[in-house]
Image 1 (cartoon, rainbow, N blue to C red):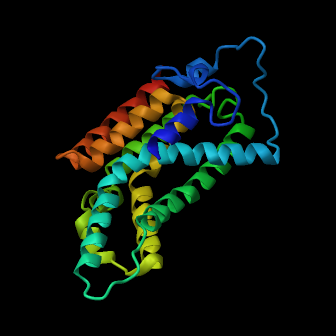
Image 2 (cartoon, helix red, strand yellow; image 1 turned 180 degrees about the vertical axis):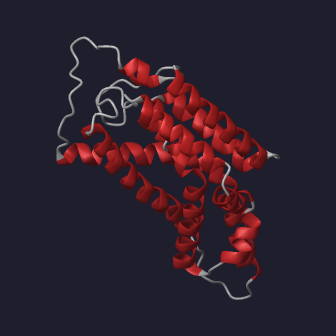
Length: 253
């Protein structure tokens, strides 16, 4: 599923644009947006209904590509626990599909993707992000997102949500519900904790470029380290400090 999502992104996610043309390694992408692009209009454009669907699917595919690897320990532990519980039953019962749990998780990120799509439309209409590069055109917007992301990384709410994501066994013991509907609800609840942990990191895509595969890959790696690495919470705090310094530098350059 992760590989399919990455393949969809690399082919342009239905936008008809090249991801390599929207990918750069700049620390200050708003400076890139200030440069004229021959033959390309920088004026905001209206979104037809079909384009809304394309943007929603693009966001959802990115969230699947970025977040599913870090959720794999939770999903695999649920799969093991379900098989173990079913094997211990004296009477044979209907097996609960693991896809129900994963589906709840992806449903939560679909809701996030819908919100991100509306925000993208609003920022594009206000000319704060480029319609062509899908990145910030404003130093103030970039700095504001970087500052807020840095502060959130250091906040108690981030810590609580991160601990839920880092302790799948504890989550299952607290939130276990039987049956397919129970699996779907557990997946949705876990997805909401995951959103609470990472939503502001996903907002960084508005800074570097929503279809910038370098930023997508770096954020995905950062999320995995936060959730899986032995010192993930400390890594998250260091990341917060770096983001605060990055935001200040963005205003200074």
